[in-house]
Length: 473
Ligand code: GLN
Image (cartoon, rainbow, N blue to C red; front, side, top):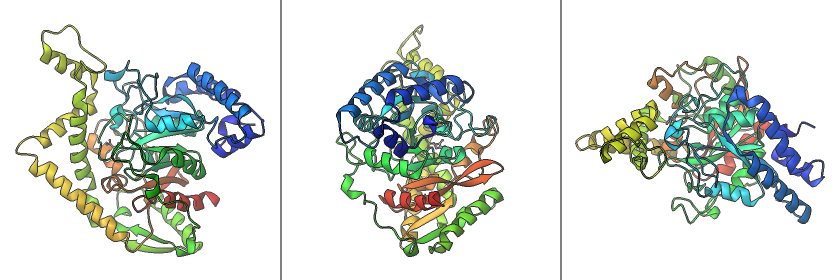
């Protein structure tokens, strides 16, 4: 039996039947990582000792209890911007290279309570700023489908680890596309939950009005299982909502479903082969009875400029806490306090992070605030209203996740604008606070491609149901 390839349900069945133990399963992943991750570089920290200890404990729990939780004994890889107690958390940055997390993020804590084993922390673009995982201070992650290509980003380590069967599933975070785009590039499922559906407590803040943690899994069913555990109210995050506000799965009938296809997402600049694949996928739903309607999201063209004003603004404020004193890297041989700040930050942060801090500080400064930040907030409202209007007519919206399949390592690193355009199909969803999933729908030139399904606020379960149909095919 290929233990490392099993889905969550298969692991649950295997453990229930006593086909294997959690310890055995955990060792298999560790062996595989030991042998194969040198070329992929998906993990920044592998916490073998604590994982094996946890595995033994979960085996004992399984031997004792009759009702084994569905997730018990599964093994998670956690993006290294989400805290897991007593394990190093770098955010992909030199500035936090030796930072040990003092507590668990709520999403990690909830998984641990189910008996999930934390195997380690995965690579990412520094502070989640990027679309290729090449902005990591610890070297890029490679795409397991083609080692000359990027896995996407910023949750590239998590996506690669799931795709390479180094773990049962992973957690990522999505601020502008960072769960969905790497999921698409690596041929796995990735959910960006509605803003507020999952607690942000214990996530290292990047852009707080957009950050959300989401499951990255081998199947849609696995995604549902993980979402059901990590979602819902948390006293420690005032933006999280009561679980009751997130509708349950219903008896879902494809014949009653209207799919919106926004014309602004099917335009020049998107790889024609990707468009063809997405159109064929839409036909699959149509053949099974769904109605398809063309819609318009007229402010889509402003999503990238709007996103790249709001996000650096929030990032520059959030990253002010790394002053060389409170956390992480501190330059010691300096003359005065100002130099501690300047030199620690100057040496600790990489280029992209410094670029965003400068951009953010600029657009927030007196005189420019109204011209940039305030206007961007107004445009954000217009983008949200486009979606509100569209959802009066349709139940879900289908689009590609990314204009192209996984691109080559180094292809976009010299031109930040090119890299920013990777978010063109994923950023507006975030500005509107909506849920969206990437589900594999085929291959282009041998590389995986994901379909993006966008839903109304808190209809996370509905979009997973809709994605599930594709998996049945
Ligand atoms: N590529 C986007 C950015 O660099 C998205 C990042 C993310 O979702 N964390 O901001």
